Amino acid sequence: MSKLFQARFATTVNDTHCLPATPLREVAFAGRSNAGKSSAINVLCNQKRLAFASKTPGRTQHINYFGLFAKDDLLAYLVDLPGYGYAAVNRETKYHWNALLSDYLQEREQLVGMVLIVDSRRGITDLDEQMIQWFVPTGKPIHVLLSKCDKLNKSECKHAIEAVRKQLQQYDPALPEGTGDSKQLTAQLFSSTKRIGLEEADNVVIKWLFEAETQKDEITS
Figure 1 (cartoon, helix red, strand yellow):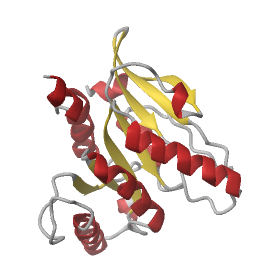
Figure 2: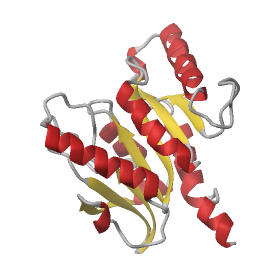
Figure 3: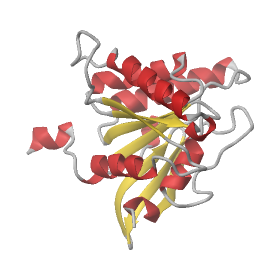
Figure 4: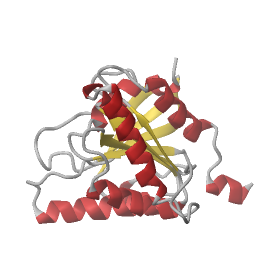
């Protein structure tokens, strides 16, 4: 049984000053509204309504924390970031989201990696690129889940994953030529409804939270 199955809602915050003051590692989930972020979190945690998907623009403006427990011991956090890309959201809300997301991604020391949910039928959009560009300078890993891949045929899936991996190479500072396999930015096909790629995604998150050393660990060891 995956350690993610023990996830429980912990807290919700609307300002970086209110983030949990703990040293526990965190993995953030980000993505455009309707890309399938909530569904991905729910299926990875083997729960139906841990993360909520809202059809109301501007409703989900908070950072939601889910704690991973071993009985009553809190071990780590999964962090559900506000969905972005709602055209109907007013300017003030967009500004708030941008400030909240950029500050969290660039400054949160406990954050060890970001799972970016991208609709496989659309590929990486301009707003997804912005998330990547905010996070890449931290040197921490990004893993892209190409969601809803069950809606593509085999050929389309192959093209989608190849295109995204090639695009991710351009953001990796360790690949100055923009070619080669990136270790910092990776991608896979994923489907919440058909449970495609579930084990691979679970392995990545578990490794980040419980196996891989963070930069902070390396500095203080």
